[in-house]
Image 1 (cartoon, rainbow over the protein chains, first blue to last red):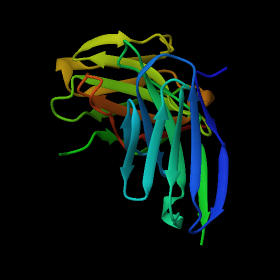
Image 2 (image 1 turned 135 degrees about the vertical axis):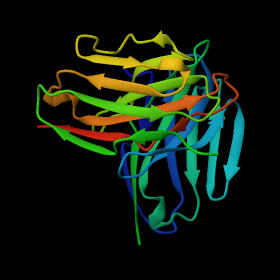
Image 3 (image 1 turned 120 degrees about the vertical axis):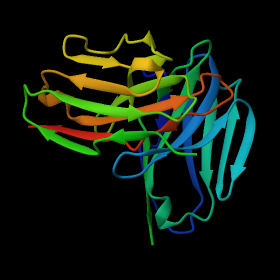
Image 4 (image 1 turned 180 degrees about the horizontal axis):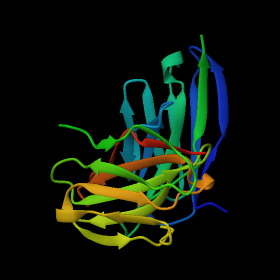
Length: 109
Length: 114
């Protein structure tokens, strides 16, 4: 079993829909990251969380440390949000990222 | 602030050939990472440097992969000889090394071994 699990693996939605991507982890962490990867491979860091909630534009990330769970929400989704969204955690005591397998999001116009 | 620079962006080689990738991290970032991302999977750490020293290379296939970070700045990752299963995107990332900062990733090098 992977230390970081994401769901769903693939998600297709219509423009304007509210999107939720989930991430569960089984190890002690010092931070959780949400990353966006577009075709071509480059990765952009969206959020780094150690508690609570963060918001940036239409993106919201939450984390529940007790339940070892995080969610990434996208409001008013748009085709340009189509990408792979990756959850990653920084292992407690080590400056090292462990990645989930990613969620491929497709937003249709 | 300039990002993490990687080159080349794409490379196609035949199996058993050698290949090298280059990474220039963000200025001042002490920690540098090389990741391998096979299609459909999340990135897997190959090697982590702290300045010019290796912190973690436990998942680096040392019989064919090597990496160095001379002078604690730029880094190169080499594969010799390449196998078909090495086809992947090779990502470089850097961070300041404290948990309060995020990571910055390069655009990656897409390697195809034929």
